[in-house]
Length: 231
Image (cartoon, rainbow, N blue to C red; front, side, top):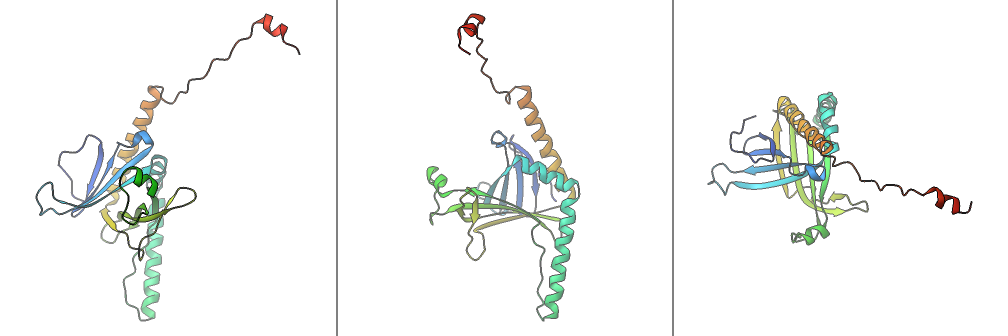
């Protein structure tokens, strides 16, 4: 994975680059307990200021990110990746016996669903032409040339009764999709550095007593008043 030496935003924790794509993790949503991950695809042949082809922003729950980090560092994700590759190979072998010679890719081993409801989009003046909600997905898939493929998808969605935005992609194809291949080392680097930033943010909250709720002092009743009250 190539390294990026361009001046970064003060809110950027880490950026990982692929060929004409990158993802960056920001601390700008920590206050709402989210980890913001921006995905971007660009055309390096264009002039600066006109290079962006598409971008997708994923707001990842902070607690979910910490669990994901534990799953990676404990080896759980690697075990799931190995199983997914074995299943893909098995299916490809079975297809060949049936005369279908087509590459079968491993399925994603991690999926995070989110998005914005149609009502919220309307409030922000960003309603979709079809009037639907906007679904955003982040997937982690075993890669082919690189160990991992982290991807973001965006398209039409529908709000469920519980408020979750369910994807309703036409022909199961998202309107936008950005894939960033990363190595094991870079994945661990991303997890470790972002986790440290989350821990520092939470620690600062405790230092500043921002988690301390003010309690109302109990009203004291004088001995005379208590004696006057009937039992």
